[in-house]
Image 1 (cartoon, rainbow, N blue to C red):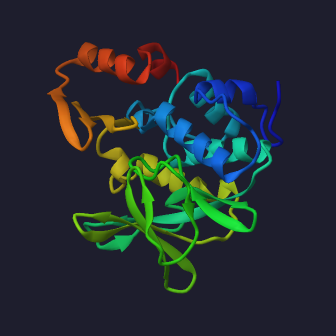
Image 2 (cartoon, rainbow, N blue to C red; image 1 turned 90 degrees about the horizontal axis):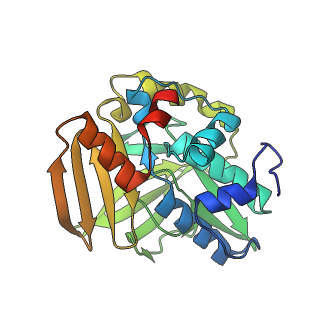
Length: 266
């Protein structure tokens, strides 16, 4: 059994949670494999917000929720915990602040709107993110103006207003901004204000509808509000309304392994 430096974390248990059994050498290939396994096995979700369970930037509580209770979370939880795993495995990593693009406002969110990670390996930096919903399967090389092909689409990183980098995705032939980020190292506590905002503000998209989503190799399963949607190879293979609490809970258990008892006691 091994433990991280900043958290009483059982690394073996964490790796079992994400179903990872490969090498632990801090290489680019291992980083990519860890990110993929995390994405495929830990859902992005905001359920605690809609069950009035406050989310605090307490690593012990986040670890208990994601690893012990087999839950998911949003960026502060998912990337916050994944950062601790990477550090404990010997990766040279840092937390960074990002500002998510709002297409309705045609503008970016506030600082600390999103938590992501940068990892440096052999003098190359990579953007790592397991907490942004439908994003890349692989870390993005922090190399400017170069199209990077990923299983989830084509991405590009560009400079934005001197101090920021902008990551965009090619959608229907146009580059759609995802978020801007600064490479400055951040402490977890710096995200506290925006973590509270996203749980409480009527202007936060997290307070609008309950959401849980997880990719598969060729698709994604998502519950938004009371709507279940499953896609494969960019085609919708199942879409249905969850008509009552039992229907909702049964699908939550079937697709995400989350029990009602866990939700009530989280």
